[in-house]
Image (cartoon, rainbow over all chains, first blue to last red; front, side):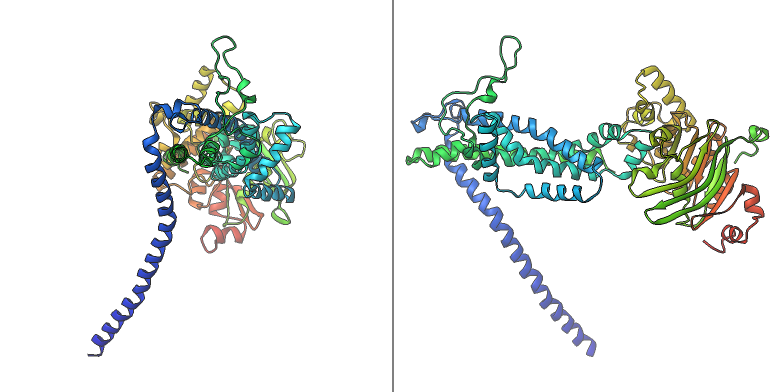
Length: 308
Length: 264
């Protein structure tokens, strides 16, 4: 029967077409695996080398010439303080800039040029920020090789990320909400303060955390402005026992951060220091992953609470 | 629908007068020399096919067009009794919006609590006394026929309400500040028939308290809720008059064609 023959032909045709589905699926999985497996291999290698080295002392010891006693106390404290400073400067500046661009700025070519430049800033190599900071913050403003200089540098670095995240979060607010508020006689500032900023805050926070996760691993600009590679004391405590209880002396203190501590250890010839570097790297990756995880969690919560 | 409200015998008072109103989106003239009165505590319906400019006309009353660049008004909308031209360049649109409220096509409650939605207009005016807020919120929600449904869940997010309830919340939000005119921009087009009926009933009840201007796609709705009707086509006001007359014996052939469904 002619029909049956055709059916066989159709089946053969479909089967031969489907082979390409299989081929592409294999290529796709392979492409994905190259990225994922590389990370997994690096992370596993670091974990295998480093995890046995992790103990309480590793976190509470100062760096030392003896690998077995060296710890990452100054590095993680430095990283935390620098991140604090970064967030303190990047969040208000980035949110204000993003809010202005989205809600206030007139839609003309000047605004367009500013927008393009903000996006381009995100692609500037971090070492360039380091050189700028060296000239501007360290020498011109006289902040020295301090936590303040490092925090400001990284704030500049993640500013475009914060601005873009702010704008995207603001743009996702439906126009009907703005019109509803304006129709009640609200001024632009009232609309921003009561609606735009609160409804976009989770999106902004996600962007800030992703920016910070990038900043915490930055090495080049921090080296450029002169972070110390060996530091055996902590910055002055921000909290004091005596009034006024808070102190900002730590801002001007020399410091080191996690990636620099790693960099220092990997450049040592002794194998024991390489183990230290692996352990520090493991901690650093965990910090970054934790921050990204937090960002994902916040985004998930946002989607659950506000659905337009 | 209940017929013949008590005040229908009261003399008509002009609340607003539209005079030679032209409106431009950039170079495009969307409204062409409109002249029309709006009577106090009456419902005036704007009808016409899509794109005829009825929503554009409505949004002139509270200067919504000022939010977007390139829009231009010519002519006047005079508000009485104080005889202010709301379109005058010297008049702040925010001041106009404080006097003339608006309910939108799609319910647009804020992602806040039911209470904060109803109270927002008062908050914008700087009201922070809890007693006054509570009082006004309750009054507005009662006027919007929503109070009984939400009085025990004022702190719940407004998004938990159904579409019809959300729209009534938006009406309450617009009513809380005692507006002189309430604008409705196709308030039922996103709602099911039951919610639509409740909104229509509400509009009918509200005209004892406030002057209402409503844009509607639905001619039956215009016939049911309005006292006066304006038929617009391509940015022009073709015919304006008492609703019953417009629907029963329109003066213009064009209006008749649209109303009888031969066109539009």
